[in-house]
Length: 77
Image (cartoon, rainbow, N blue to C red; front, side, top):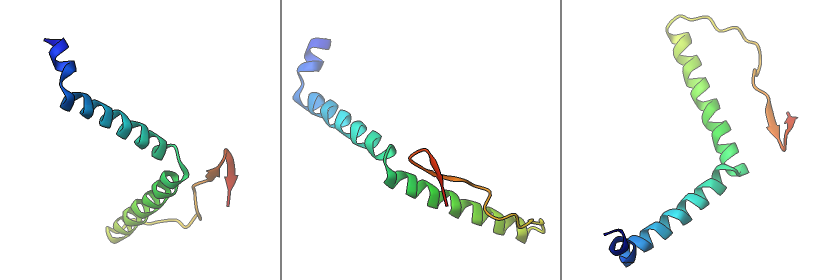
């Protein structure tokens, strides 16, 4: 039964496409484009949370940016 499954060209093509997709996605996750997108998303979520916190009556102490950004293993900014 397994032999017949492996001979199916649609399944074989699907596996190849999936491997190509996973490889490309892994390359994207490891790249600078993803890091920039992740930083932007984190900042957006933090700002939204802070606005909601303040709207609910919470106090926010202005401490400046509490995050440290890194590029090639070294702090930037």
